[in-house]
Image (cartoon, rainbow, N blue to C red; front, side, top):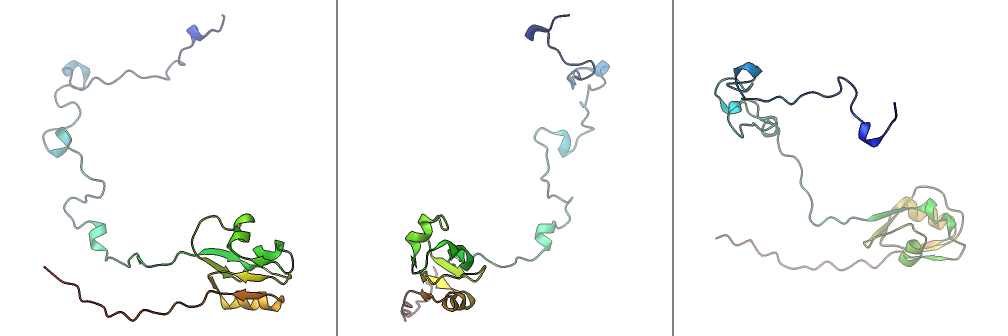
Length: 163
């Protein structure tokens, strides 16, 4: 027997005939079409949500609310000290150098953390650094330059007006 695109068919028993619901008693699926008698689930669109527990107080309402998303959070890009080992001695490691080296990608403040080891003396200019990271850079003969702290504005908070 020759094989051709026009001769392809599923293997025996691999397919099933479609159930023709509600097409008469002889089909075995006539009358109520397998949905039982009356009730919400017998009606069109009669689906209940996955979280519905039959009127019992649902789980997501029994548990308390926890925490919040701080709108004023600062999302730092983290750089480990060990990633700076590829820099030559005397190099100034700043945002441009980190971006060119592929260590940081997006905009936003950069924070230096103390993961890994560094043996070359480099000058690092980042927005924030952990104490252990600063100690690691300085023990290798380098230095960390952080931006000057911005003065806190002592603005009087106005109470929210209701109404």
